[in-house]
Image (cartoon, rainbow, N blue to C red; front, side, top):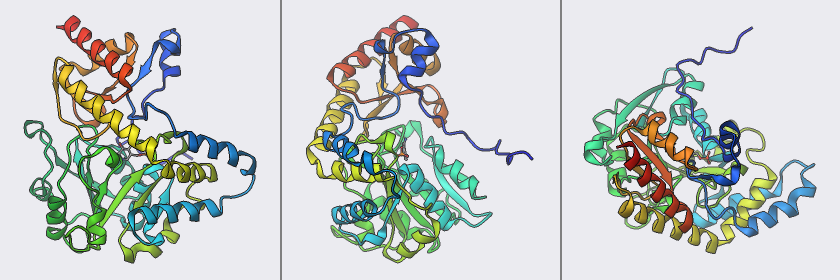
Amino acid sequence: MQPRDLSDHVAYQAGRGIEEVARELGRDPSEFVKLASNENPHGPSPAATEAIRETASSVSSYPKAAHADLVAAIADRWDVADEQVWLANGGDGAIDYLHRATIEPGDSILVPTPGFAYYGMSARFHHGDVAEYGLSRADDFAQTADGVLEHYDGERIVWLTTPHNPTGSTMALEEIERLAAATDEETLIVVDEAYGEFADRESALALIEGRDGYDSRDDVAVLRTFSKAYGLAGLRLGYAVVPGEWGEAYARVNTPFAASELACRAGLAAIEDGDHVERTVETARESRERMRESIDAHVWPSEGNFVLVDVGDAGAVAEEMQERGVIVRDCSSFGLPGCIRITCGTDAETGRAIETCNDVLAALE
Ligand code: PMP
């Protein structure tokens, strides 16, 4: 017996941790800073840490109330019904649930390239095919309805990432609305807002609920995660907000106990600690502007907690920056050669990233 042949899957490249890199290079972990996975430089909210501590002694029981409490808090935050919140094991888990709910064997999804690899990987698990629409470097990775429609051919799901990983570009709500109106009734537009808290634009949830002058739509879903602005990446907590009529489908697609009691309790505390999120977003905004101004290479404008830098030989620059203690992401794995992505850090981390990047660029010239 052999596992399925999944060799046509594009692997999701998880960033390596500081411990792993330090061990491999035979160095001390304290020499490194990791700005490669868009994590929160301030860590989790102290309230979330406290909630984890308080929950620790009860983890011998299956999750119960925390699911309902957290779902209610999320629904309350977005002013939607509880049933519209599909809690999951990270944003990745929410991607998977949406595919389980929609893809029949042979159906296709449409994804951006460059883009986040897990959309395609998950679709293929469900025997779906993957088609791509390109974001053009010459156009600064602009996202428009026409740019997507040019490649659209009746796919089941169209994935939008806004802010987009790894470029930081966004799509205007008017464009998302235009796209949804132009696609078939059987197509769901999923707006991945994993980095939504950092954006200057409002959430596409306005389209689901018909707020702020938009008509209510039943063909748009939004994905969010606690891994970025909330600093809970290690707990694996995310969710999708789906159209009202979709609520019931959740019971048929979710893994029993979609999220752990620890994750739910911490998530609940994190939502309530608005100051921590605000501080995190402020730090990211300052950091990305500073990197744009001070790195001696082209840095694209970004509404995420990271910036994309055009460095030429991305492999060599990322390796040399790592050698000098700053771990960044070579974007070849996103289908974007020649660029590195640097996560926004604290003031000190940002200063170190800028200095190291500039030194390496000068040394490799
Ligand atoms: N969507 C995008 C665009 C992402 O960058 C990520 C995380 N890297 C996710 C979804 C998944 O988020 P999570 O880590 O919560 O699974």
